[in-house]
Amino acid sequence: MSVESMYQDIILDHYKAKHGSGLRDPYQAEVTHVNPSCGDEILLRVQLDGDVVTDVSYDAVGCSISQASTSVMHDLVVGKRVEEGMATAAVFTEMMHSRGEYDPDEEVLEDGIAFLGVAQFPARVKCALLGWSAWKDAAAHALAVEPVEAKEEKND
Image 1 (spheres, helix red, strand yellow):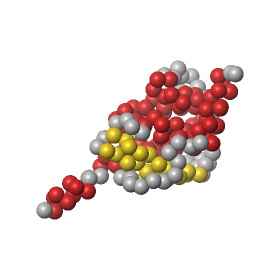
Image 2: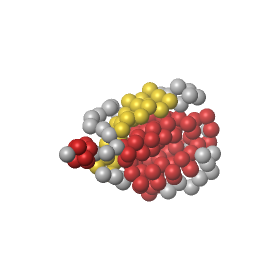
Image 3: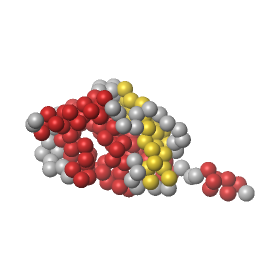
Image 4: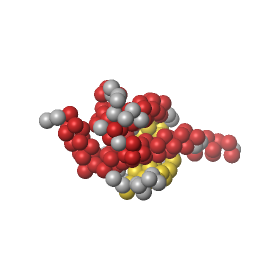
């Protein structure tokens, strides 16, 4: 089995069994992102406990690349501190803008390395980054939300 074939299989596996798919409550922040190039769309929710990502859920309509990439992103950020997730997002984004000339660190990107081949096609890069962009926005919004307890204390 070639490396390209293995990577294609990873993408198809994540597309068929999307990790984190389906909107869940509770959540602290919700964002919608659309790829104007192709019409792919994602509604993504983030739940934090302090600065730790406890859940990412989403509903998406789009190609296999955008949905599989969001599934991989879910696996890479849930259970991690937001700062770690943002660092991983930066590494993934750097790889996606490399036009395939990148030596990915499997320890950091895990199944995300499968998208190295996608990076060779500039028109598909936005697809692979859609869920990541939504997650970064939602995580930033979630960090800005005051916990309900803190709001109640101020009213006393």
